[in-house]
Length: 364
Image (cartoon, rainbow, N blue to C red; front, side):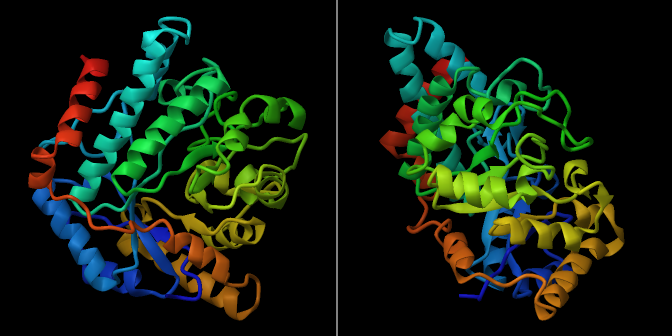
């Protein structure tokens, strides 16, 4: 195992290029994230994932695959998963007390199992799910990705989804700590600011992280500034990540930065920063891994990806950040511990078929 491989990058196409292989083999690369542009069909995806593992078998193959509008693979047999709000609505049908609430938890577990087992059958290790943000009705970028406005409902249903993921051998990722649902701005294109007090945030949006501290295997912080706590976005704030998330809430798993190419990551302390400086700041603040997305296609030949890998290596030599064995161990713990069930095997598996029935009952 490497001393610390913190970078999660992406590739431009349906198959690896020589440049992709070189980047994936870099000792600072810990994994890659897939997008819709990397998908043609199950056979192609499985071949791509096998090729990635042939470069290094410890690379973590990730994807944003939550259900609803954030689901990268939707054809060639992949189940159309419902947005998480649908499960929340199912919960409240009987006021959270009757049969609908209990059926909602079962359906949530089924959704997690279907999601993870289909991904793993194609060679994908990990999905950045579930969303723990609360649905305040203001955020377009979160919206129906959230289970509920009620942190208790979000926690129960998220835990049920995570149980389904675990049954299929997949880790989980709660996002976006300490909460992105209250602000209107989209951190992909803006820098949202949430002016509530720490007490208010911990009592509401961040509550699921406290209640799930022993269940979450990883967390992704928000590119949101909470000025009453820190002037930096949460993903670049040691106060949020070390003092609050790890210290106060007791979280022990891995921390991913959100995408460093998002607008919310490019301005730190009022100054525009490079990808390397953003990565160093995130790692020094407490992130174990940093994501750089879409730069394999946004820049000629993926120059920004090479710039980040080279820049981080230089920063390491200059002692601007120190590799962490603990971070590398946390990354390794996200890799599946057992072999996946094949796609053909899933089609004959009673648990999967029952899960499909439950999911279709939500979406139908």
